[in-house]
Length: 399
Image 1 (cartoon, helix red, strand yellow):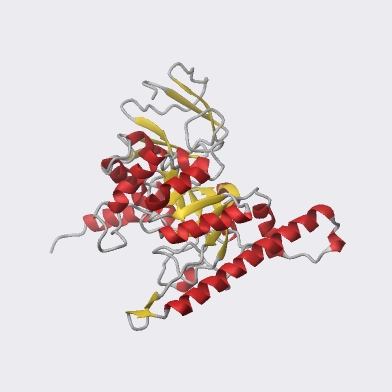
Image 2 (cartoon, rainbow, N blue to C red):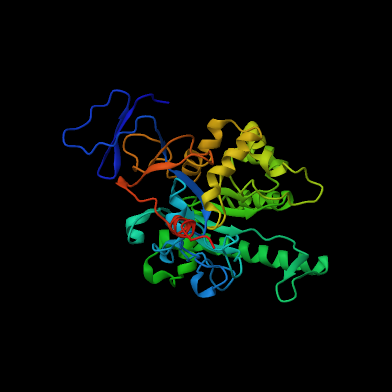
């Protein structure tokens, strides 16, 4: 912590920061006396820009048809004009991960086993070229699970199917996933040792080549302890660099995650427990439990509609045992480290992108306000649709 510090921004990056930094001549000065400066918050799993109105399918591009789409890249589908973006950044979130086929409240369509590639980007800009931090940071895998219960939207009822049938589907999906990985490994070897005429180009296998080479991690969605164990075993066997997403029961396998050095992006803690016999604070206390076990984790909103509550989720985890320092890092530094972009965002250090927020209090506190917001060094408006509607209807004449 730096008291009475100065932060210098130049060419979109942090040029200097410290207590005795000299302000360059001619610089625009913003007096932050009495305010606090933090790195912008990082939402580690969203459908930001991929989904606008979940009930209107033409505005949703969060998933593709088919069960194996490794060539899909979120960046190609993100809409920079999404109304979710200004609402989200008004809460101090300056960068996000757009994750295809990741489910969530704002998603629609099937969750492919191989969902595609997640993109990290800042929440301001006219085009994705302006906004992009890293085009591909992880390959999405929705790890197969034995699912006997489903929800029928047409009848609004739950349906059960035989365990044997669910197990058969699980094994089929797992075998197909294994086959894709093994074919990608052979394809990667062909790329490295043969000429273009020696093999037929396959864009799906080409997209998986960095994965099997260990250059691109897999973001594996799994919640139940059994599925997490199976996913860890699979990635270990296939020599894939794994990041766990979801992790509702990660606390049950924390020693396994720690021993394998597998980080976790947790779902929002402000959610009901998954089982009726779980303690009411099961999800609220899990971040602290993982921290004590030495498991690195970040928090994500897993949708758009409630991304603005990211800081509130971290604050509530702090209220249930997580240190304030780890709570803040879980939505700033830790996601940047997990996805390999900590050299660009996550802390206030010289040379990093100037994704910075200036607040009148702890950014995780619900009552704190973002007074100034900088994205890639540009002072960015916090105006948004929610604010405009509030101002409009708060002035409505009383009958």
